[in-house]
Image (tube, rainbow, N blue to C red; front, side):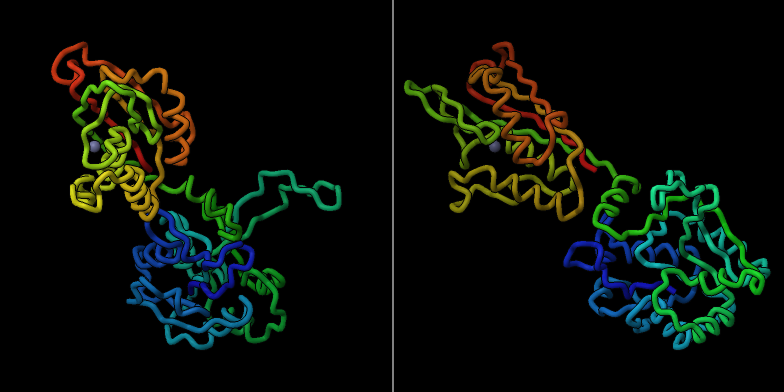
Length: 367
Ligand code: ZN
């Protein structure tokens, strides 16, 4: 039984927290997938909001309407479920099942057919203070879900129960430890419950990372001219006696970065999305980069680092190094320790060496 009927009131976002994404999937999708993968044939999904079902594969799911409180939701589901089972695993959907281990251990214990209730918990490693006094943390258990129950007994207890405000079902049995066979199971896995927006950030950092890399290269013809001209490099304007020949504004740095992001996302190159047509004539290269950054964001990737290499005889890059870095850090929303620009000349060799071209390589890592 997967409880997804909560209101996310402490989450501080308009969106239901269960629809928050981790590695391209919502928290709800992660949980349903994990439970199916482990071999559960039926899942009662308890919801109050049908929107939550968008994009969900509802095979093997039984949808049950939740109640006003968590305990009423469980009660509804226990009484209205059509699934026949001796044991029920009750799980808060806001608690992400990030590995098989916990579920497999619970299944193993349940299969012993000894316990009325199996409760996973973790130990408290912090000092806990109540009214200025320390509480002995050795006595503390941080109770988690999924919890396993003999279905008949927990249904009976829920039907007798009048207290609406409790946060886990094992309470109904824990209150009478002599009457029920209870097994506490230490779980050192992550299994963090998403309550506040910050919890999601913690989880994102801890969650299995996918790292990808991308390569971008751009080159433009330049022309020496008599008067000073402003050319775009890394979205800043540099005064130089050259002109960059380009359909757009000719910002080789932004073009190379854009291509490297597109590459890391397994997309096509910049020219595919922004061909040399009327709309793109003299276009600000920030538009191209914005396009790639939006794709990056939509796929829930972030930039890990960028390594840039500019190859040019003119203009000299070093005087502008800091300004270019500052500009890119702002555009890409990264820190200075995530980017570097190396500048080299081509030692007078080839067309770049003869100041006829300017080129840039971008190597990016995203996660
Ligand atoms: Zn270009």
